Length: 399
Image (cartoon, rainbow, N blue to C red; front, side, top):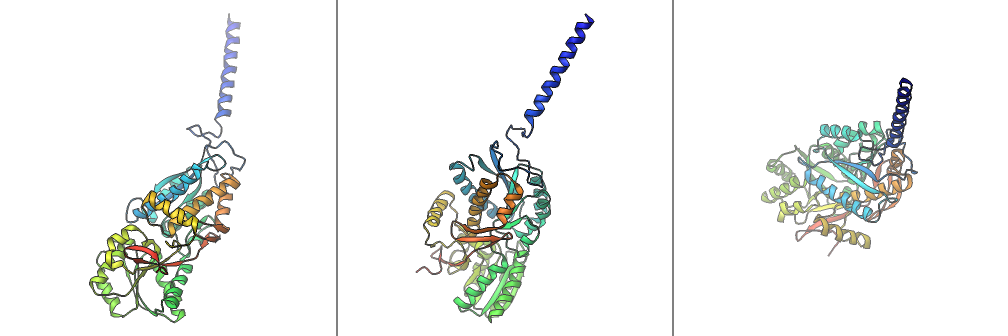
């Protein structure tokens, strides 16, 4: 009897070992949901031969609360629009794409916290965002450590892509941007005297420095440069000082609410020179808040509403109908970046290193509005002048 009991015990033990081994083998590389986890780590170890994935994931970090919330929502709409198109067409090699959304509140400190959360998820193959250069610069070391490409649609600080070899921006840098602006203002508009009122953040400071340098090199003069802090609502004292310097153009920069309020207050002070700013003013709310005061407003953008390109106009019509949003250059960056990510996945699978390498150096990308290249993470795109006429954004050259 004892002998039989020993045999039964031994057999039971062997069965349990076999079951444990089988469970271990079958569970390898599986997430808790049962889909294969794209575990890349810092080495980008997943290869293009991986055909068992059920979804390729990206993260987006940007403001969904706080003073930049409207920009986070607009970016989400643009990425989602492209994502829906790609997935409706079968995804990438039969695999659907997914973006998870994270709120960095447009604050550099919060961006680091968010980046640390994203970095813990091995399934992410890329990170889109943030909206603000400062948030991306703060988060850069976190993503570099795990080998994740941080691909912003809008960061324009000259040092953004210099933070690490895992940084990309879909925007022209301030260096390139201000050169376009100065050339247009001085050589096309024939304006030689400009007064400035700028938000005191990283972009505002670099705008002030680079515009002055480039405009004065052409022979122009910055009559005065005033700065304001975030949350300012009364600009009358600063506008009065700028008006007294007798500029031919008023260059204002901040959020769309800031610039619309500046325009209203300038009008009330009978300061009626043209107002110029960056193209992140190209939102419906800017027109609503600014009203008659922003009539004749000028910006430069890659999103010329009258661009004579069939695929662009088809996209523009569909996007506006679906989202209700005006298209600006950031919208186009979000859209193009989603398709670039899809192409990188198509060629290399969920390999972080290869995706990063692809995104940082793209030659002659046939974007939705133009053909352009990205070198060492920095985009180089053409700009076109746009103005506000009868309460709408139209090409500056339109009759």
